[in-house]
Length: 589
Image 1 (cartoon, rainbow, N blue to C red):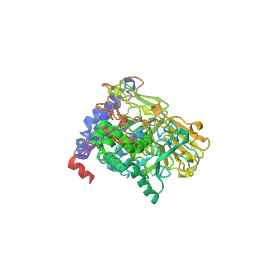
Image 2: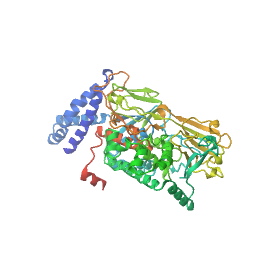
Image 3: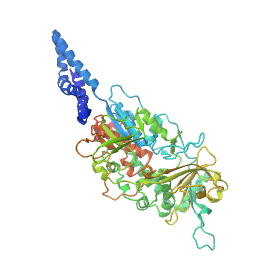
Image 4: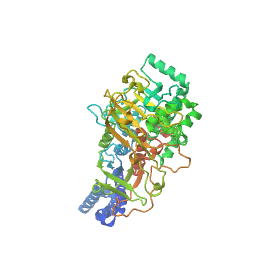
């Protein structure tokens, strides 16, 4: 008796979902009204009496009773078989969208057990799955992840290049999906280049830019060389490097607290609530320059030299115009614990989508207007149809729909990436004896707040090549712009501009308190959209990209994806509320 009632309750939920989906259809789309009538009337009302009917079969020898019980049983089975499978539409096939689809699919396949889903083991039988459909506006998957195929074995990243060893989601993706990792840079040495001072008798404080620069600081080798590095740093900056390192580690530890909470199923409605829960929201209201000076006793010299160079290297932004959260994360983006995926980081996206068995439509755009109407356009317009239980926006565009149309938009930052082949002018880089002495990455250092005196923000040799260099800049570069940097005009192998809506990353300034919030659940107007060209059913809209207003990395995109996935699954009833207090601690044990 209990078993039959359990199955009937499960079927009742499926029927309710089907009914809600049918209610959102236009009259012309009500092609299965007879089926829905049977599902609503007979399966819901009669199924709960199936146990009684089945028992009656054994109590009565009447043929009519046997047939009646069989009929009720068949009706229930047919209704359960007709119950529609959950469907989620994800707009965007970058790491944010791919991770969202992966988390939704995997957690649902593990019956809502987040820790089991992230553990990498096989999914148990009998769990309700979710079909993931992905629409990508570009003609490829990966978003801001893709590599330039310059030569055999030479495939440097054009977009996001690295993740850190402490990034549990990215490292977990690589391990679970069997992706081989590599160190994208030739080493971990950093060189900080400043403009050379002018010669005697000059009225200008600095020599012409084409004369190159001198090193403020240059890391070289190990052993005694490393000791010299440390001594040189202490001589110039005192204990500021240690103070800054401690402050950054505290910030990263706070951010790392999200993993335990998300494994317990905890999710937040806005990016601000997520950051507040981690003790990081205040870091979005102050610049990294002010944060280090007032909270970590880091002097201006170290901030202007090192922190500024790293903020420019990773985000193209100055220390006074980037928040403490983003600037602190940028300071973690150096050293020997940085990794990428062999063959290109876009393989992570490809593998996530494959694991989720996602149906991918390229050249296809999903938009949500102020009336809450969801439209599909482009190549997949005729193929993405039917009712969806949820729609997830996973691309760096302002949220749309109702109040979200007024959400504080963020501007995407322009970055130019150039791959140039040639022989460096060693004297341009601090008078090095040869180009081989160049540090792994050379970053430009500002002077007295003036604009960058060099044509590049950073330059570094590409792994696998003896004479190909990756150059980040604020302006497009041609051989003439690199006069002096190379001994002779270099060959430009590849150029790409991250700009406009497809910029490399958002502008990440300190935000005024009271700024509009950035929701993971997009507010929508009341009432279903009745536009003839919109998706039917008025599904709830989520925004997996909400966190990027504050910080932009592969890992924080994955954290935002997990948060959105948990909200979607909770809305579908596939993940319960997270445990609290002692219960949560018991789960962790």
